[in-house]
Length: 398
Image (cartoon, rainbow, N blue to C red; front, side, top):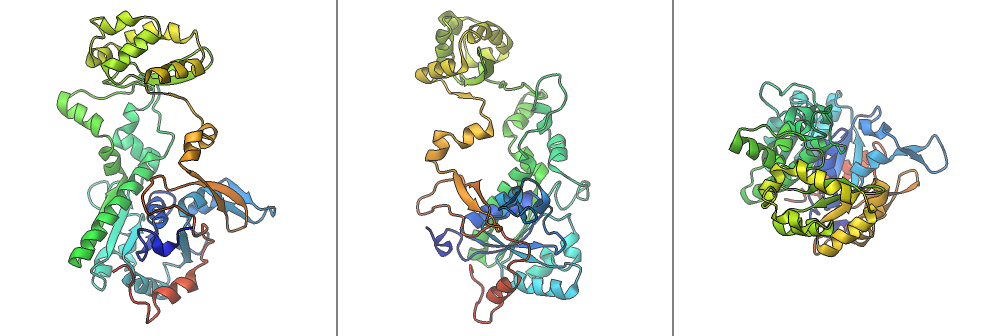
């Protein structure tokens, strides 16, 4: 087992003022790589995700722990602190002076009013990297506007290209607004941390869910900039490739992605219609995309004659990218996921045994481990104060 002090971010101290998803996810990415992430929670219940099901017990029904919370807060420590108490805030300021990074996703201005904003803390800790995650940014006309994942998916344009043409709006089933913001935040924290070590100056990071979803929509925004056309939902299809979507086999749906002319020729041959690849309507990738409704009409009757498994074997044999429509039980027991060791055992604080997904990127010299259980609320108050504020401890990670 890799020891925490051998991990890439060993010695980096992070205070996380995180609630629910975006902030805690950023903190979890840093913690998985070895940062000492201390989660600051309110004493009366802590992070709201602690009450989210599934609530798992180890036999005693009253002693339950949220697996949703555990998934985003493993490898962290927890402190329960009353932010309305001036003495408690004063102690937090001491911790802020001893840390390298603060990650927070309170509404803009809340921590500043408590004396825990970037401008106040940088006076005594100029190397501090302070990352604020919010729905719409720290300034501007929408800064004070409330935000949840679904509302930012709608605001960002993402929902306008999700779902079927002409149908009701559909959000992405995964909370991508929260998690994309968490990814951008963690990535930018590390960039700023490198700069702080070189220059002695940290800084403030303003990471918005809106900006993050626009950032990952580069193909859709560039389509609009280049053509003036409004991107629209295509179901599982693609605006520039065809056939590149789900089809219905005899027993189930499956996906193929013929992303170039050679692959299109293989698909056409697989259904016994090789002439389609030379048809002037589909002779190039862009022409095929323009006429993809016709392609679907021509291919679907053939796909209905065989099972999804048979078609997947056929396409794999021809080198055509393809996939079943997996459920999460399917993919979490998949042989490739097992090979990549993406599912790991996890023990909850109440001794219940469950599983979690690993940090998903392999890296030489790094092996993901759950080296700290997801924490009980306030379990580390005394421990963190003793370690971080001990006279001989100094400031690690500098």
